Length: 579
Image (tube, rainbow, N blue to C red; front, side):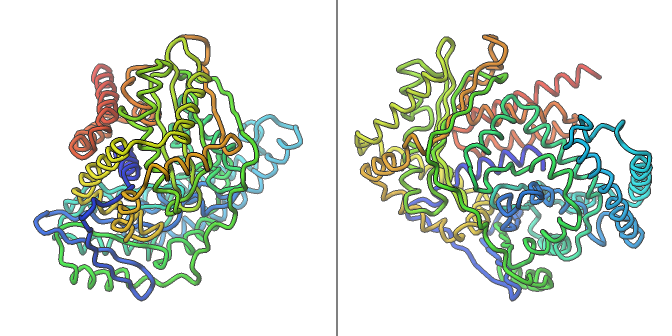
């Protein structure tokens, strides 16, 4: 998945609550196929394009130890083609895949021996090529030879080529804790192509290059996590915060699981979670709903319902009994992250927690005013509610000003939370937040892409109808509600704290983006490592997407887009100088 779309998804999800302006109702034509697949249609005459997508109700929470990362791996595999797309000879292709699977079974036996030797302390690194037996080495050479034979049959990026050749754009996908989503913009007169393409990759997928793609995921993990200033520490913080919940492992998966997932395990996962009864599709744009339903019946109707409906995750988070703390030294500005266990999406207390977060957040929010402008203890401060499908958390962050400490920022944040517990929020301040919600949401409903994404993400959790029914819940939040949830959830025993000191002394970290809040800065820093790995063509595409985003994102997100553009332009200038 490319970085432009990651940013677009992130912005869409951040703006998801609430989803409709008071008095403005989103009208959706809903149709359910006999196989259980849901179709959501919003016709908008006049736009020559259709934002088209579908969501599989599966994310990393549906995994288990041993196969973490498989949901994200499938996001990659779903672009590898079908029986008709991606290969010049499907019969030979399938035969080579079978031979690769058989060889991989033998290789796994050799790998298990190395892992056992490492467990007993006989070797330092089970990945060290020098420790392999001669048989192990021969098997790997035979495997590589088969891959070379297969590569002669493959048509790289064929799925994308077919779409772009017909005028489609923006094809991409993304995996989260709770869902996996696929989307593209297609010309209105090519809608049947979308139905055929998407049904074909669900009906006749060929997960070619499976083992090679695991290496691609490894590299993605390295760029997103290992190569960022605090990526590995954040991963550790996640694992510390969640005691038992599956939200405790990363969406990309643990390295040992990525290396060990078999194609058989992956196929079993696909059969359960990519069945039509676990999928919803959405179209927003210029099309006829009756024609779309007929196309859905013709193409998606061929999919067979799953043998059983997927079960939700069984393991729930254990109540936290004591504060948790983590101290790390990283190549970043000194800062603090504070998390409290809160509530999942749709909980009766979530509207009040969301409004509370909005009172704290932003340049006009309480945290920035108190910590940055008045006390001058921090350069940035933010906070907000994150309600996932099965669990929830409230996170606050603050970056220490030069000469101040993360602990001082931490205590200043606690003081603001105590104010919320004891002092009612004024009517004017509360209404201001609600007005900002309404304005931001109005912008978010204007674009076909944003609306399509919201429909699918909401359908994945509590149903698309919440796009209309949630706004009154947020409008109804009172000052008393804010005080009540602050008192209920912001307790010392329910929190985890991460303190970050600057590694190597007082040399400042990259502070070119001081106008960003902590969360935005971390996203930009994370993307900086990936930008360094892109070629000129990829950077040009990303720059074009970022320029398009300028007109779509709300004013408070413009600084982040500007920072992203600056990074891209700097890298393009470097590449120009290298030529």
